[in-house]
Length: 483
Image (cartoon, rainbow, N blue to C red; front, side, top):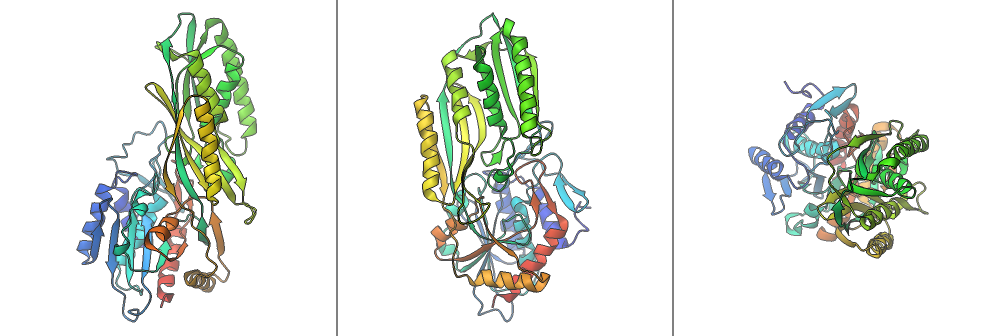
């Protein structure tokens, strides 16, 4: 018996549980893509699997909808793979362990994959149910949305005929998304020189943990602590008072997730060790006070560390700490047109020691392309001034608001009929694939919506059962009204 077997809508949760058994981290979608091909063939539907493993499944219009405009149902099959430090889980082969807590579905110590597995489940349920009224459908499920949007970037226009696109990758019921930010990834690479640890030094291991983290776009306004920036501030404060060396630094797992944990190993003169420990305790008190609302469980652990034989030299230590301390992070500008909407931001998602280099991976977002460029230039200038290199990758365009949209009006009308109130029409600071579809396929009438998903991109990710049901009924009614 499946964990979700008796929950309505049964077909949706049946497929969500099935795909939860299939590894589908970004870049590891082959098994998931092949599963969707088998599903389509089992149901006698036309299916296309392209070279980057995107899937297009086509279903003819139901009776009476033969002349209705074609609709593209769209989501992405990959998920962010994050887990708690003490969770034993291999995302390349282990199924997601689902659990129910009241109205919510969680995973056991890992991300749930509701973002965007629920879109896959909705699409499969519609394809499998021949009682639903709908225009001709093209279900488009892309790969690698979370790390580079290379699936959307490589869509072949000849595979797509529809001109209306319903993106099911939003995370708040009752909101209709009509615009989103564009973005780009940056990779700062700082070369380091190693030296033998002096016998006069002792080593300390510092661990920052207990943070909530979150989605680097949609959660950026919540003011949550970034563990990499906390670590940088701590190290900067200590290094201004004491002669220390870095031996290791690492934090975060994904550039598009606000990092929750960071670790560093430092060395210092034996006579300074106790004073440095006291400094760390003071910093912990400062951070706990500053983030008492957003991150009440923030803790800093410091322990004596044995076995360190090599450290960064003095100059490398200084450069790495300075780079991380000054590197852009958080909200850069707020929108003047839409109250409360970030206009541009960046997130230091990953810091890692890699041989003779320290790498910093960051996700930059903006609804104004020139502000993306400005953040990248600032990051590049800082990195190069300190002797490092900055590269960029995976750019994706913003999705711009359209004054006229038939699907937006249909979605608003259906919502009003179902709930007696107007939905919220919103723009978000997170990225969805719609801008790339506009670029690749041409002029599309697009909208995005979805059920309530909380704490996406973190092991606390959970999804409301009631909201999944509500949005399922809403999706079915929207398809019924497209004539």
